[in-house]
Image (cartoon, rainbow, N blue to C red):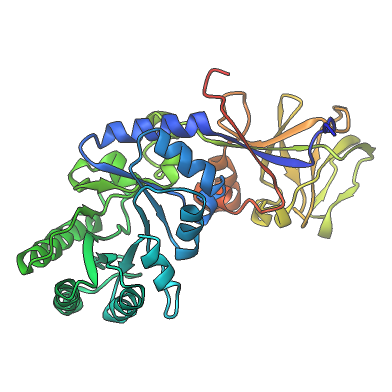
Length: 383
């Protein structure tokens, strides 16, 4: 049966915009391979459709955080080089080896687990050694690097692993000029040089995330790893909006008004009555809340476009709904409320919501929940 009623809420994902973003980012790093990072369900945009679209636009690698994400992509037919980097003891090492995944190794414990899996699978494991050059999260510390390199070379000699990559991750690349960026780059160069002097022959060396891809050509090495920029969100709003980098936001989040009603002056709105109507007005009910990923921290500040006018969340955002003060306007029930999109029709952007909630654009799109359907379309900027 054809659905004619407007959906409660939906996230429209413009794959044409994503492909255009990939081509733009590739132009910033023309000599490097391109890894499309699709972790966390493609930053909320849909992991598999986004991976396919990125590969169509010239990406040559795909990256995920967890092995489960990478294995799901393999099972769905993604046969490009595929890397995953967030491992815990007892993870699906053998399945990853058998699927030909590139497995990130940050310490000798992980190398031992992957070599055991390679023996069990009677297949050489593809591993990439991660260096902690100053981020302080995952990765091997410089003092432990010689031991990890030596054990990796022994495992290579035994035919258990092939070291396909050497890599790291920046802490502050989204803050151009931050001294840690150059400091980390220097440490990375030293750690790569040591590994290669010892006999490691990687296919790829990489450290550039989205902001480094856009602003630091000297970090590109053999491969770049754009994540958020691929989805059209600026990784560094302080130095430019998406359009300043030639990028277009991919996700548009809309809802259908569930109620439009008149309210008198001094009428309390939502939990705690943190908002009361300043005069007689109309209230519109947006049927989406923090259960859908709308940040409660944007209560009273989140922007919404209704009837061609920008409105603001009135009072608390609840689990399933929030209210906007329509100022006497009377759109029909079912009318569209645009929470965020590319911004070219006057609607707010994910970055606007990030400012309203005191967070970053990454979180706004990634947190949109699973009960919000993703509708993948091919629109592009002129449709």
